[in-house]
Image 1 (cartoon, helix red, strand yellow):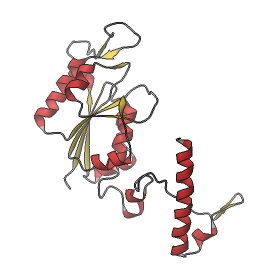
Image 2 (tube, one colour; image 1 turned 180 degrees about the vertical axis):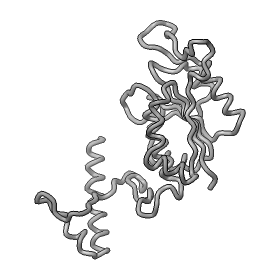
Image 3 (cartoon, rainbow, N blue to C red; image 1 turned 45 degrees about the vertical axis):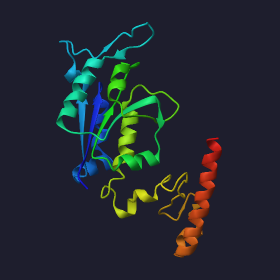
Image 4 (tube, rainbow, N blue to C red; image 1 turned 135 degrees about the horizontal axis):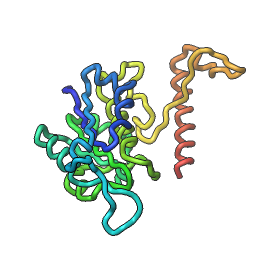
Length: 227
């Protein structure tokens, strides 16, 4: 599989630099499985003050990110290569889930647009957005954190990023709406709390049965929480 390219556009790129160069995302880049470019919106601002936001027409609180820098950046990228998706983090978007992450992990080139402050001028969304995703029914300061969460969920699914013992195929939600069983490691007893005996038995059949049962318990609890 050819290396995946991800471009992230943000007015506050410092929020992205450390997470994109740590842990599994860094490993993916070091292995040549993905390349990630962060674009500072201010580099595409028109005036000498590098202004990227302004007051909203019609009044209201907060500042709105201006359309010009986004148009300049996205149009430049589109001239350089074709993109499978241009993704906006948005409270009005479809709820991002594991199925979507699986589908996007097969992409070649992706753009993530991260808003900040009050909003992005809606002309940017209307012109460029192919997909809009929400990470839940709550609001954060900007689209950077949702973009990072989606990127992490996508990149770890690229073949070869995780080793066999970390296989993403064993993750919760990979088998529909199903939570994985709880996990334990050494020591076998700590502060009076013991690891379930079946996990120490070496009996693969019984271990699988226990994991299936525990998975069902956790899945039902998750469904109760989310009714």
